[in-house]
Image (cartoon, rainbow, N blue to C red):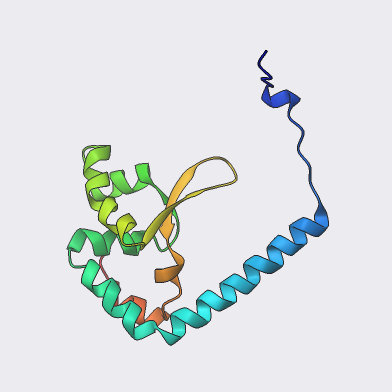
Length: 132
């Protein structure tokens, strides 16, 4: 006999104290990551510069300052296919500069990772400049 349950039969348990604790843990991790990024900013800057050598990479990073869908990126940069966009995104994912994020509405957007986002704004501007 197999015990297969549909999603409608599944039980979801929520606990406000657990949710509150998770939020507190995330806040502490964010604080630690911020301190780490600030203290290692010169090293991170050099790492990022080594991986943002192409004009397309810099333009994509600039555009993703605010999360964007892949279809938006494909359209705005005139890539003729998803594969063409993927060709430019893949290296940025591999070096942890961009990531996918699921929005509340279920859509997937591309956004900066914390590694890049936590660099000082002046450093970010000096790296990606005005690419538009």
